[in-house]
Amino acid sequence: MLRRHCSARLRPALVLLSALSIASGCGPKRLAVLGPLDRPDSVAESLVARSRLTDPTRIDFRWRLNESGSRVRGVGVARVEPPYKARLDLFLDNGETVIAAALVEDELRLPPGAPEDLLPPVDLMWGTLGVFRPIEGTRLIAGERLEAGARRLRYAHVDGRELDFELAGDALRSIEVVMGGSALEWVRLEPSEDGRYPYSATYRNLVDFRELEIERTSVRTVAPFDAEIWDPRE
Image (cartoon, rainbow, N blue to C red):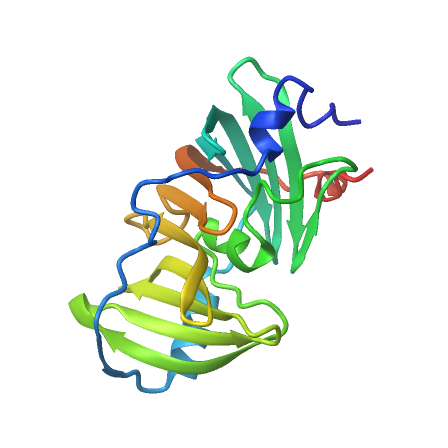
């Protein structure tokens, strides 16, 4: 049984939503469009194949949360396994559990009482691991060639949002959620040299004024994980 995700002392810092000014809140710089991308569907298929999970892997990282003017930080571990399973645990530096979550395919699983808005939504969660996975209900509508050799794949969601995936070379660099021409939230990555798990990921929610930064400290291939870790609700 997992411990409670946070104490009463921490809860206000994690779930209170009020005005917060975050520097550079306009989101990642959007590169200029040079023209349409040839065969964007083939680019998407290739990126899915290159970025999919291949081995059971443990990723250790440090994290920082800035929400409502409150700053909380600690350490964490992500455990991932093909085809599409990820377990995320965030702790304070004293070892106290802040949140545990599992992402299986397109389902985010949280224990009862866990804050549902602390982590990125499923649309963006896979992206924090460098995995390109447009979720069910989205469709590719366009591809664009950008300055500096970058590319963008644009997906429309059934709820009216647009998800823009920006690629630097063959690696995912950012995901931006747009509605009505305005950015709602985004993930920005610092890709690794091997093109696998990024060195760092920054998630910013421009509506709720929340920023979560993750910086990896180690990555290693491990033995397959026990099946029960994929459901922290139990």
